[in-house]
Length: 507
Image 1 (cartoon, rainbow, N blue to C red):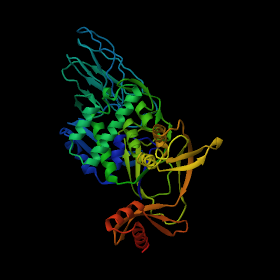
Image 2 (cartoon, rainbow, N blue to C red; image 1 turned 45 degrees about the vertical axis):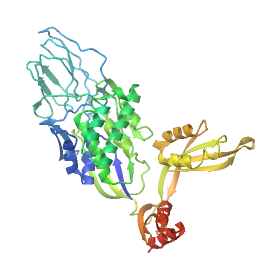
Image 3 (cartoon, one colour; image 1 turned 60 degrees about the vertical axis):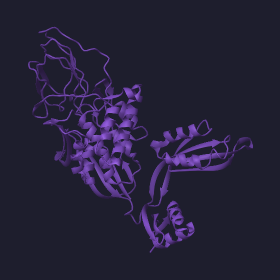
Image 4 (tube, rainbow, N blue to C red; image 1 turned 135 degrees about the vertical axis):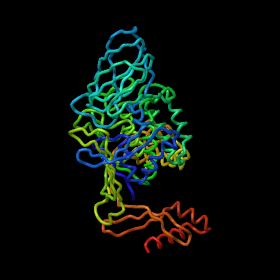
C-alpha cells in the first residue's frame, strides 16, 4: 500500500510542501505550468536547489513579473475599522506600523513578532502600509507618492530599515535584490473559487482545490465570528498562496497515495502581526484546522506551521500512529530562510506497507463512539444510518441488541473513527438518532499487514485484500461488493464468484 509520511517536526508551509511533493510525484513541470492554466500570464513558478542547515533541498518560488509574487502573511484579511490618518503638506511625523510577516517558515529565535518603526514622511495624504522582506535584513525604502493608498504588505521580523518619501513610485529594496512596486488585492472566497473553476484543471485537482479554499473560508469565518461571505482573503488571497494551494492539490493527486501518516506538528510560539492585528501563534485558522491532531510548541519562537500548511494537513487527514514502513523515495522542501538552531526543512517520504512479509503486527489508535438508544425503531437504526456513518468517514459501524436498566430492550451503536473525525461523527449521531449523548474512548488496534490487489477470474477482475500472517503466510480475501457486481453481470451466484477469486488469488 502506497503511503505518504510527513515529517512535520519543523512545521509545514504551503511552499515547502510543494517543493518536496512535486519532485516525489514527478509533476514539477505541471506545477510550473499552473499560472497559465489559472489565467495568470505574468506569474511564474520556479523550482531550484538550495542548502538549509547543510541539507540540499528543493525550493519553490512564485514570481510575478520580475519579482516574487504578492506574498504577504498567510492569514485572512478583514476590512480594517480604523480610518487612515492624514497630514498636511510638508509635515514631518512618525508612524507606528504593524507589520505582518511572510511565512518563509521558521522565525529567528532572537526576535519576536511585535515591532513598530518610525519614519519621516513629507506628503499630504493618509496612508497605511507595511512592507515585505526577509528576516534580519537591513534595507532602505525610497518612496515618494502624492497619492493615497492602503496597501498592507508583510514585513519580516527583526529588520532595520528607514523610509524616505520622495518619488512617484512606491518601490522597495528588500530581499529580492531589486526594486519593484506592489499591488495586493483583497479577494473574496467567491472570487478565488471563480478563478479556479475557470482554470484549465483536471476535475479531481479542481475539486480538491475548491474544497480546500471552502474549508479555509469556513474556518476563518468561524474564528472571527462573521459570515463566510464577508471573509476577504488578503494574505491567503495573494497570488503566491493561491498557486501554493492549487499546486498542493495537484501534487496530492499525482502522488496517488492511499493513506497519509505524520509526525506531531511543530507550531512554534509567541505572537504574529497580521493584516488585522496581533494574533497568538498558532493563528486562529491554523489552530482550528489542526484540532484533534497532535502538536508541539518546539524549541524556537515564531510561527513554524502556517495556515496553508495546516490546510494541507487537514486535507490529507494523516494518522499519527506510524506503522513500520519501507521507504521507496523521499524529498526535502526548504524554506526561503536558513535560520540557525533548526533546519528550515520539511521532509516527505513515500513508503510501502505491503513490502513487509513477516514481522510485527500493525498497531494504531482509533476513537470508539458509543450510544445506547432505547427509543428508536429498527427502521430508524437500520442500514440507512450505518451507510450514512460510513460515507461520512467512519472506519466501521455496527449495532448490538442490549438490555438496559429496568429490563428495557435497546440498541447500542458503536462507531470506529479516526481521532480527528470523532467530533464530526459524534455530531452526526446526535443529529440523526434520538440519543442525547455519546461516549468517546480511545482504543488501540492490532492488525495484520494488508494491501489491496486485483484477482483475475473467469468472471472478470475481482477486488480483494491480501493479509500477511505473523508466520509470513499470505491470505487473500475477495471483496464482497466486487463479487456481487461480477455475479450480477454474469448471472451466477456470489458464492461462485467468491470461490473463483479465492482460487485465483493463491495461484
